[in-house]
Amino acid sequence: MVVRFRSHVLPAGCLLALAALLAILVVAPGAGARGRHVHVWSQRAPGGGAAWSGPGDGSPQQSYLALGDSLAFGYSEARFAEHEGDESPAFFETGYVNDFGDVLKIFDPGLRIVNDGCPGETTESFIKGPCLYQAAGYPLHHPYAAGPDSAQLTDALGYLHEHPGAVNPITIDIGANDALGLIDSCKREIACVLAGVPALFAHIGTNLGLILGDLRAAAPNAQIVVLGLYNPFGEARLPGSGELTAKLNEVLAGAAAAVGARFADPLPVFDPPGALEAPTICLLTNMCTKYEDIHPTDLGYAVLAGLILHQYVLGLPTAQQSPWAGVRVG
Image 1 (cartoon, rainbow, N blue to C red):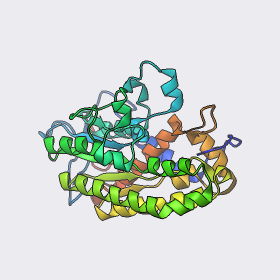
Image 2: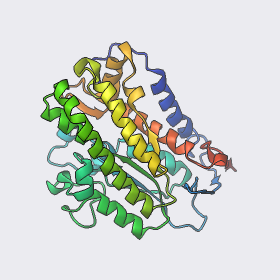
Image 3: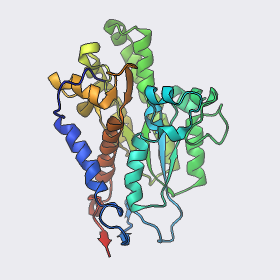
Image 4: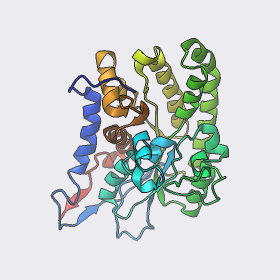
């Protein structure tokens, strides 16, 4: 997702995403409202789940359910190497799930974050299992209730059934490892990749449609945000990869729309056109480190959280679309 950082100028989209995250953080109780009570109006969204909710309203503890692959987990090669031999999930809590969850906790301090993310997960393994990372003995943030040979979808549906109406929102990122599997098998030869694209897109679209359909059936009122893909290679490393990533994101967005979910697209932010693409990839991913790691930097994860947050806010009921609408301090 990047090349050497040569510029201190961030793309406008990146600045907007960061601004969205920071704008909400400034209303945190610890940042100016210390010692005061924050009251949040709670409203049921028509067909879209609960809006901002707060403690003390008599409702059960709410959960944010995060699903997906290594991005949901918060993985990076450098952090994994740094803690080799003690791969506690506590070392991987600087990803977009925790960043987004921390913003939600401003309005609901009792919110529970349930992170089912599994490094290496594909759409196929998500449905059928197992999570190979967990099966290999590495711990997850939320070990699957049915054991290490079970599937992430099974665990997610089980959790939703055990906590009816108390899970909102749900985020998911999946499909990147399906695409990387094709790229690796083709040894990055674009003609080979292009030949495999139709079957790949159909496979991902079918599997994601099944996953989202099951999630929507189990949580009809929850807000679901699907995180799309960015292109860690850029046009310089893999010509044509940007266009293919954009088309795959269209597949993901279509599956999201089919169940009333929202879609967060990181591609324009991580891969701006022209000369800014290479330095932005270096800034937001670890591709320019010795690991040539496709995973985001901490800043990149924060940007992903901002993009998800933007879609989450847009999906709130009209009266609640400002994150501080209905908030009074006193």
